[in-house]
Image 1: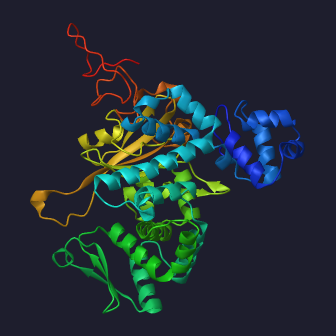
Image 2: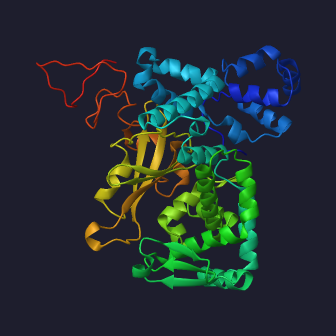
Image 3: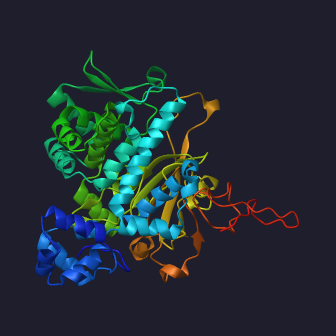
Length: 474
């Protein structure tokens, strides 16, 4: 049975789009589903939630992925719309939170169009600030956002790469504990490519480099074993998996070289993760250990970050894992990696909430911490976090790069995780109220607030001093 969201499920825009793609009118679809046309009209306008039996009938009748169609996309739209209407350029057109939810829920396509228009406006504004001539080629999404959007649209799952990786594992006759040597031997015998570990003083800041002159891959000794294996897998993807990668890129609809190259590297990384952590074995181990990240790391010889990242890709139809989101943040609070999932959407710009546990991970390095958190819309989720370090290629006095990795999911999965399975109930665990960032958060009593929320009038009373620095009108 599909892992469906709990509570009321509204799928109006998706249902309407499905009907239109099938070239059906409301009367025809209603007849096929055994409901009235008026009821279907209410469903399409989100005036009624869809029942679970009807949702299953929809899946059986039209062969659609139930979890995909039942997933609430409105949260993503609300976050982006909140950011857009917080922009000073739209100061005179502020919408209330209720209005934003109504726009996202009832007019999703219009909301998407508005987001696209604003992104184009931002690009033109940035170009104007840079005193560059604005032409059609400039009005493109930023490469990182472009690729991230494609990954989320694809469910961060690519079956063609999973199959290619399985074939490579069989061809190379990979043995547990000997993946690096087996893959290096396979590269040598199939592509005449040698693998060489090189000293850090030779590689400098490079972790991997392909030597075209001598047909060899050079890997820096600065990397731990699991990262050397991962980079070797990336090179294998680049030399043996190009047809599959090119097929995905061709269907992505990217229109600039930067986005295409970034997606190519991202898909090569995906293939490498498949080599190290084959889908069926990894999913079975994850479920058996109740997603014990350290046990999985030991079993598959992968790093904590690699394990967390792979867990976000377990979205194969009929064999899904928990829907996780992923985040990587540095000590300054900058987010360098993020993948939305599990109903949690991150703000596109700016930092996240200092109440959120990834920002506390640096206090207890390399120790796993767990937090139940709740957003302003009452959505509760679990976050598992731990710090990791990156290979140091600079002088010791500069320091080793350290990041906090966060993996999270909807709180309803608490019984499926080894970190929270002993909790009596979801509500019995202390829950921390957080936001998506101070500029977007409207919690008026937060001691951690660094800036006031955009769009709210500040209040100053010289006879009073509140705990928080900023006091504002709701």
